Length: 504
Image (cartoon, rainbow, N blue to C red; front, side, top):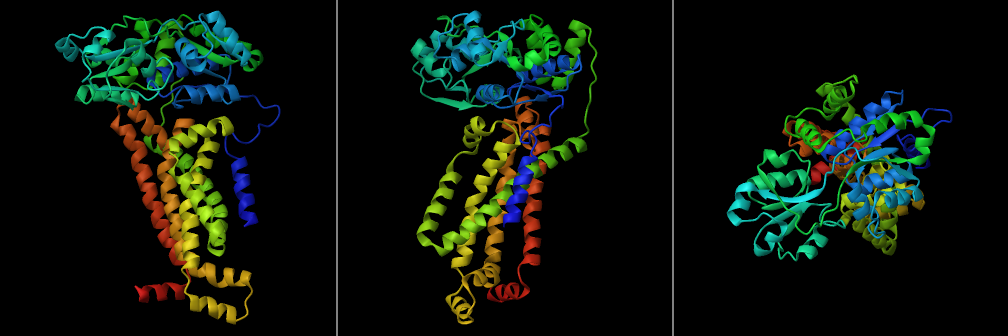
């Protein structure tokens, strides 16, 4: 058991982003982006500009929402990412009442962060609905919604809770609607199209506004602030890499609002990869040529499979090393066992996405928090099945072992654990299958795996990309289940298997 724990520790130390960097190595420039198309495009632009002076830029794309990237930047796991002044004032520094960019820069400097000038466009929030529906109801302004309490509203999950989001908007306009739901921003457009929703939040540079025939409602009480696109970066990184920062800051004032709408349309509606969209823009605006690489489907699936297997195997090995001894303890000490099983059950009820986000301030982004979350979710089935397998051993067998004069340790290793092996393996099998599915959420915090193409496919409404992650994940789950069936034939003693078969 000690050897297994030591092996797990060594593997965890080798997780990318967990192991300390060797002294003297050149640090990568780590670019982050949020889980929507515009942010991904801006991240690609930053990464490509950073490579011009020779930096090794890595783009960690689609990392969930604002909190994930903000925490990663402050922890030093990212060096730069695109943000919006409205989000900084209304969400990250909501209690400060920062009125202008000078005050904002001062607040950021206190966190060791810097901010670029505007990239050239304002991507503010807005409310929108189908043009025909708005015309039929006579709705042109947000205040017109007061006369229609029956409307079905659906907002992006972040908008439901942020400082300038639905709660403050509802209070400012005294809106009466109560049927309001939170959902993914990209899914809201499909909800409008299908009629499941009638009003949703928009980003003013969304290409879908024109594509879906939406009316942008006038913000007649001026609730939403300006959302000038900027770049946030770490000051310590900037001082070490002034040439790279200078190259990246060529984006300042470069992108107009119509151009950003066009870039979003190329990616969202025309299904052009964001890397190509960014490359074409830099060529057109700055005359810069950059290399475009396109991996084959087999190469992408193999890469994601290795990432996914890494998450599942490391977390499962750690869980087995901890949960089997806990299961033995639960079987031998009834009162302690109730506490152990109760704690494992409580952990199992915590929503996986919430657990991942809670861990970010402690463990950062990447593989490490995903592995810890999967480890915690694996405990319950293994502990429970280990305890059940041991307590289910018939009393006459226990009495025979005691009559032979075997000490408790020998009875456990030579008789009880072999008899409980089928139950223990079943618990490990359940944990492994759960891990394969849950690991897809790790993509939200930069852990990779099959969740990455699924997230991108949902964002781009691309069924092919969704299946690129979902089908391998399902096949891996089936393969894992089959592997444990085979393992049981190998590990479970033949005599025990025969007796089980006769009992059946």
